[in-house]
Image 1 (spheres, rainbow, N blue to C red):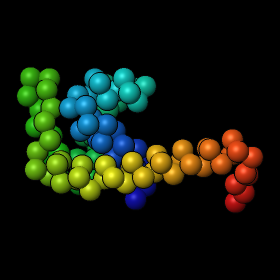
Image 2 (image 1 turned 90 degrees about the vertical axis):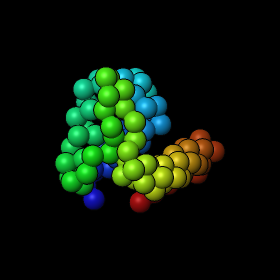
Image 3 (image 1 turned 90 degrees about the horizontal axis):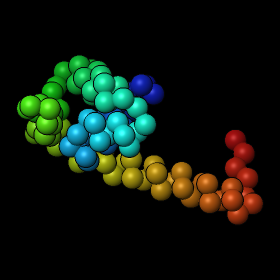
Image 4 (image 1 turned 45 degrees about the horizontal axis):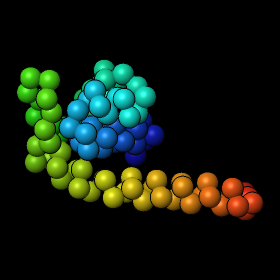
Length: 97
């Protein structure tokens, strides 16, 4: 998986949580067009639509729901791990690669 696909998955997850490209964009500090574009690229790379789009509203379809259920816990764990690493750095522990 490329970093661009990971970014697209992140945009997808936030859009799924908020059920809005506009709200997702606000949380991600990007334009709603950027969120829409990343979700569309993800859909194209998967060969699946993930949302039903109706009158500026979005709803997860079956494929989107399945993907969200699989990826949401991964992003939650990633955020927890990053927070733990930041805390270790603040506590004086240096992480060296």
